[in-house]
Length: 317
Ligand code: SF4
Image 1 (tube, rainbow, N blue to C red):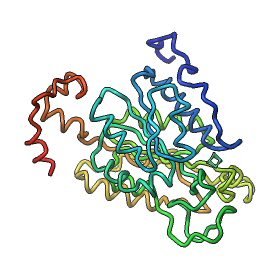
Image 2: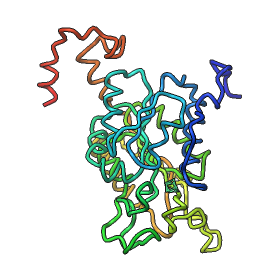
Image 3: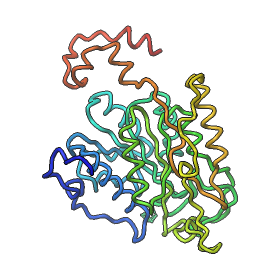
Image 4: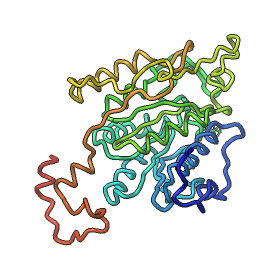
């Protein structure tokens, strides 16, 4: 039996807003939103201790629909804002959200930089392989040669592998899920939020308006006798703790990125689950060693007048 809730008065509806939602009917975003609200509720995180940050795109409207603090920023710029939030107040649980175009295209540099720092926050990418808000142009995750109904021609560039990229960049929790499997997403989101360090969850998201290739029916394998394409790598025995005790962090990352590559999504199979999990020092711990008052309170509550940060800046150069 689960333990009694610390605040029995708090309900799931306390994480929902009344803001009008204009996502298209059947959009996979609805499932991701629901899983996020359920995860925050089940983690018993008080709404005022959570901030949801986004960039720009259909999915980046999410902060309007979650009753926590929220910040709808600029295209591709959700992660720098999430970084600033964590540095200013490391007591806040920060969840950044956005689309694949926002995160892996426009904001790619910030994505890589965020992984390198290992700040303790969660990043959920709604990956539908198109820029939905601007009528369905191909995004960085669409495979070469594919052409959705919204594209004038076939995609001429290779689609990137977000899992291998995130592991290589330094994210210490890397997972994938599916927008129409709320239960799976919710459990992955809970683990991502609990993880001490940068967590990235790439969610395959159906976009019925513009992506007519990766549809609900396609994922379910309707074109091949209901042989579903999605499979859970952890259920098949894959252990995300790939690090050998003898491995250093760099070696473990290289190994995990190589494995993620071998799990490449294809017409035959589409992998989800947790690909990588490693415990490494967080950026917040690095700072607290140098500014011990951060162990007692967040930076916004410290007396920062006259604080000498020259040596810290020198060390970070
Ligand atoms: Fe969802 Fe696609 Fe519509 Fe955007 S365009 S709301 S991603 S279905």
